[in-house]
Figure 1 (cartoon, rainbow, N blue to C red):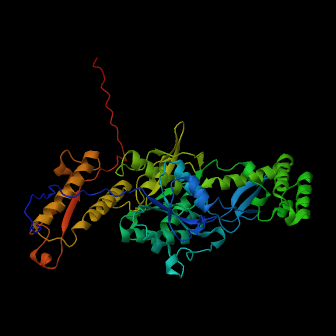
Figure 2: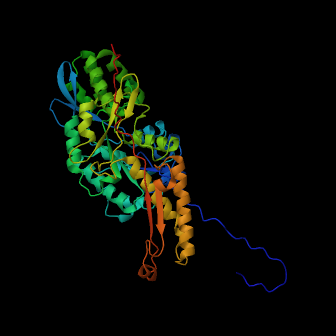
Figure 3: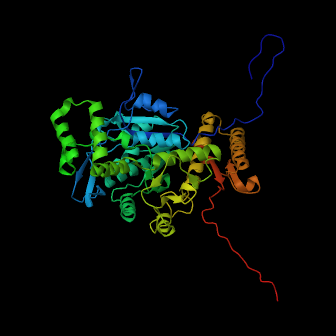
Length: 491
């Protein structure tokens, strides 16, 4: 109480209510990868996370998609796209690598995403094979060091990891999972690679390479998504690593003449002339059409993480983080790389090793839906569901942030009562919103704090304030079983 020296009337405001705990936002993602540029008003955002609010803003700051180039061979390779050219098997290959950041952010916004952080690790030309671009010798550019500067990032997506080889991709994911375990408020969305174009082999490779003790911090999705982002008018001769090599594959005389004209023109050829040549090839050469269709199938095939992340945010906003982000329809998707059956999903969803892969499925007359709700820690009774893990992270983070004002306060009963009241008010609000199960608050949660309950006299002497919180979270109805009984009319 202040010391008064002058006679008069004084008013003192006394707080009768404990401080409120603010719910941390569990729906803020960070997309990490490569971009065409990273500059705004002369300021560089390379290795500097920037929060954006629309896809248009992304385009303004980070530019457009990568110009992926292709080449054709008659040799079967694991990474090649098989197609028929004049009735013969040929293989379409990507030159160097492919980037997915632009398309993933676009799919994120198309599926209800909000305001994500974008972390550009470099321009497309800065790419190097392996993990060195994510963990360079310069620690200031280490992706996980940078992520620590974004304390409110709750969802992590690495779109361009889908362009890496499976072992490197999974090593990056494992490091990201370890990071999520360290900060304990982030969750990783993984893509199962489409390397083998074979459902069983792709999943086996992913599971064999995902070795971690903290798999509850991540969820994986498969198969990849077909979109309609690109059509024949957006493809041309510039999409080939060496357009002149088309003369080795095309048969029509007019088409071969056009390729000769291209070689004669060389590097001086204009964009308009390239477009004219492409249109003529489309008109004169069925073989060229087959090649363009194969390229479109590859370019329109996207990893699901961007769309799935958007569905997470949409579900959080509409229902709450405690609602499983499943049975959610995906927008801007025209098909899937594989159509998964009930039998195939059984092994994906409940495997022996527990590394569940969430299926994305197409249902006739309905659309394409996320049809799985499990983390990669599927054998855990506590942490097998995404919604349970993310809700628990949100509760822990919110209470941890809410308790910071009590640091250095007296470690006595008055402080304990305030902390307990604030925690119980926070949890009761979650219970009222449907996040916790139980017909009464005491069935949904408990908060325990005090001498002889959570602390000993020695704990207090060591300046420790210990509180225990227990919650009964709502789990998704993953298996709905209907029992029917037919009563026959007595004769």
